[in-house]
Every structure is written in C-alpha cells, then in structure tokens.
Image 1: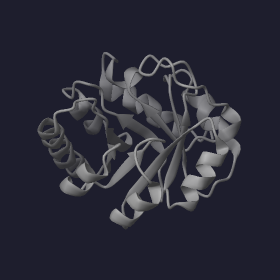
Image 2: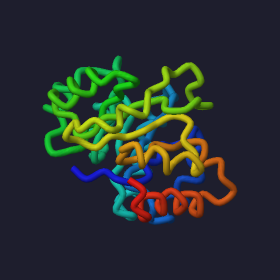
Image 3: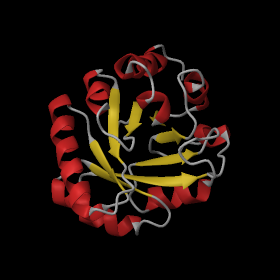
Image 4: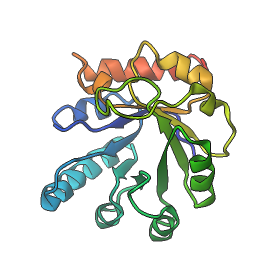
Amino acid sequence: MRLRGLYAITPDRLERVAEALGSGALCALQYRSKSADRARRRDEASMLAHMCRAHGVPLIINDDVDLAVAIGAEGVHLGRDDGDLAAARARLPGRILGASCYDRLELAERAVAAGADYVAFGAVYASATKPGAVRAPLSLFGRDLGVPKVAIGGITAENAASLVAAGADALAVVSDLFDAPDVAARAREYAKVFAHGLA
C-alpha cells in the first residue's frame, strides 16, 4: 500500500477534524478515543467515516477491530496489547492493518509477517500525548521492511523534515496539528515537507 504524508490522529475533541480533512493534506486519519462509552465511540467513528469518504481519506480505527468492522472503516491500528495481528488480518481482508512497534525492530518484522500493511515507531521525540512512551531511534526508519514506516510522538512542523530524511514514510501527529491556530494551514505545512522531496 502507499501511505505517505501526514497521518492525523484525532484529539479528544473532534470539532477541528473537519478543518484538517478540508486541507487536502492528509494521507490518513486515525480515530483514537479513550472513551469507554461504546455507543459514543460508534457514533463518532461513523461520523468520521462519512467525513473521510467525502474527502477521499482512509479512516483507521485505533485498537478496536470490532468497531472497524461495524462501520466499514478502511483499516485498524493495533498496539502490543490490542489483539492478534494475524486474527485482525483475517477479519479485515483487503483493508489497512497497522501496528505499533515502539522502539523494536523485531516487533516490526513480526508485524509484517502477520500481515501488517504499515508499522509505526515511536515516540521519536518527547510527547505530551504519551509522556511516558519509550523513545525510538531514528535509525529504525532507515530499515527496509517492505511496508511504509510511520513516525509518531512529539512531531512538529519544525522537526518533520528530519524524520522524512531519516526514512519515515508518514508522520502521525495529534497536538501540533490540532492545537495550531489554523489547522488546515498547519496540515499543508506538513504536506510541503513531502512535496519538496526531503526524503
């Protein structure tokens, strides 16, 4: 699969997601919610699925294969404790399967063998979203794993170019995107990093 560019991850409040989608600069949107209210999660995911389809952006559900299946999302992203990748692959044929691999190359290799379409390494920098996250070395992005590599954690428009230069195919961003005064303009700043061929 081709996954290259800004991979937005939803903040707790979804009001500004439309601005990001309207920028035309996203390669994917991940719905990530800490809410235990399953009805709310389904309603929000369904709303996002409709918005994403209107903009031609794949919606990836974080940590919830059942929800991804229920709303017909384009994919799911699983962390280390969120279920078996091979089982998720079997339930989501033809859809996107991503895996968190933290700072460990062997997890990425196992994920690819289990059918993952992309792998994510991070936190690459200190992250306000997950302050206790392990730090991943940039050297991981130079490895050829046969699938796109996504960088996550503490990414800003200022450090984005160094990650793309290191070999990251996509940049997963929450705070620096959705806390920006102009979300669409910030999204386009990220798009320029990829458009200028800094990889």
